[in-house]
Length: 253
Ligand SMILES: NC(=O)c1ccc[n+]([C@@H]2O[C@H](COP(=O)([O-])OP(=O)(O)OC[C@H]3O[C@@H](n4cnc5c(N)ncnc54)[C@H](OP(=O)(O)O)[C@@H]3O)[C@@H](O)[C@H]2O)c1
Image 1 (cartoon, protein in one colour):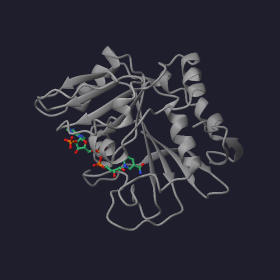
Image 2 (image 1 turned 135 degrees about the vertical axis):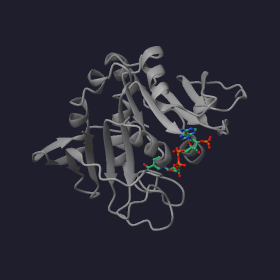
Image 3 (image 1 turned 90 degrees about the vertical axis):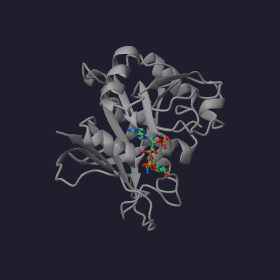
């Protein structure tokens, strides 16, 4: 699907201006911010007003196409996209940059054609029939503590084993050193997000605040994180005039 990233939004912070999602994203220059020992790490989530990351078990009903434009736009600015196994099981990912024009633009901008897909899974119980595995585009790296081998897949899969439990610092060092990953987007879910925040491994959070109440028992932005006050700097606050969505960018100090 070709989604126009030149999506008009109003910047409310740090100053007021009419702008677009694309104009805001190209100024980010995430790859220039790579750490020596790990990629620059950003996360992206969509949340309801009552703080849920899912409605009926999925993230899709929370945001509109404007939220998708932000997500796809962020995917065009990174070398790798990371998810936890729970998100892969719920969302059954396919190719993350589906539009050929955006993949060509990635190459012109010095990125690999498709972002490297990174999946964190303790048990290696993944939906192997999902398009990400069956369509053969790009490359996948799975960090796991399971001993068994995955089934054969059309899309090449590299397995990185952490038999004593997944060490996210070591995984990021591997991605930086062996795969040349400069900037990485983690798209969830809340449990993986909690571990990344807890480990001091997140540089920026991008959060879509949807004007919607979901209710239910779905998770929030972050799960299983010890209670503490963690102030963030507001990088920007953008408003979508028609849908009422607010896009926050928060920097970890
Ligand atoms: N609103 C949004 O923006 C958004 C974004 C993402 C996801 N979601 C939703 O969130 C839900 C999934 O939540 P979740 O918290 O369960 O997902 P998750 O964080 O993606 O996945 C958790 C799973 O990842 C693996 N994992 C994570 N860290 C690990 C570690 N250190 N060591 C070993 N394994 C590790 C484990 O997999 P194994 O079970 O294989 O051991 C664990 O069960 C879905 O319903 C999805 O739709 C919403």
